[in-house]
Image (cartoon, rainbow, N blue to C red; front, side):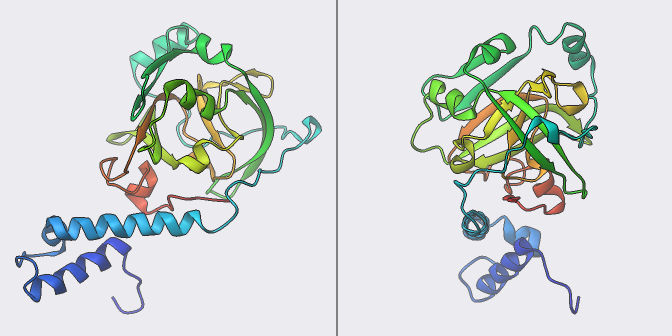
Length: 259
């Protein structure tokens, strides 16, 4: 183990073990057992929250991502992640042109919503040409059109207690449906949109049809595709493993992937 940095959760769990040895907690065998103790779970939650807070403070979160001209569009815009969700339900939606696709808005809201694609397209729209930066090392410039997320949240009446927005998706990777999250700073940012069009045409399936998140100050894995739900929450503790996203929970991607 010499020379290897331990994951944050393991370090905190070991700290919990020292507390237990001192008599502040019942002695439990192993880090996993210790991490289930209520006091240590609170410490773990505080550690994740401190990490997210430090990530939020890294740069000016209100600044706009650079926008480009149509002449700058990439000739090919690769897809990231899932290219075609599995299952008969998605296939049926695709065959019908997503006419019956709905996206729900739930959680800490005054007015839960269930929006069709017609509803989404009827809202005021924003078009922006931005660069997509993938964690795999490639970039591409594309044009995206859709309503600003903040308009949808305003229509739902997000409550003051809400601190994060969670995005639910239709694509399944291994054992779970994809999910991501952002804080209210990114949720209300003018360039955060739900895109249904790309480069002046309906969004291709490989790029997230019928609806994907564009959160332009973040790396590609934060731009959730195949959106089915938006949930306002006070904490990310009960979302997946508590780190805020599918890859954050599984391979320690950073929750705030700011660029």
